Image (cartoon, rainbow, N blue to C red):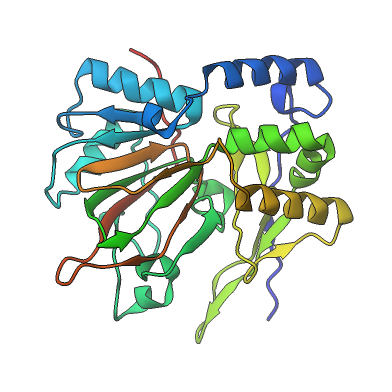
Length: 305
């Protein structure tokens, strides 16, 4: 039986992300570039205990999230304690976890190499590289992933580096190159993730939607994307294909806007679901790489209180 893809219905776009409002875009662009952190080191915030941030630590993380949609925290906490990402999240208004089917029972995923069970068939649970993506690009609109935390418990012996790109910077570069690119990728059926099936039939319906959209809750720019070439269907439209190809080249090229970090124990990433990848890695004998991943339907509250 063929299941028709569900298509996200996008609200009308206004403000800096509206193709017709060049003045608002120019004002937003100038502010974005003026305030953007210059280096990866500028994203890093040393903290004593992520579970209970000091006021200054919280402000520093919120400031970086406001300017770059992400922050990297560094602590001396080495415990395999899921309260670290959970309690950190709560300090930024992140409370609605996405309980995806491969997550642990508490909704937080223990991302490590899996030799058995369902997880072994999915790349995050292997030591292979993961291509550029935003998390939950296959989710339906009511389970949109707006924010996520990656907390490192144990790093690999080598590899496991993440590349990070603020999706607003990707939008800015695309729009500067050709405003038609972002218009094409805002089409409500620009990118379709085909249905996932198993021996029992369809376990996840096909999901069609835009790459770029405006989040109805916050008015912020949202992105859903994967650089995978399998299990993805781009709209049969020359403008969409040209935009997708341009974006793929952008992500493949060296760039001052791409931050690279190898998380060490006690470090973590908190972000508004920015673009990211992961290099392949080699585990140390007896000490596999372990990262806790928490995905949220909320967006980071970056109020500098």
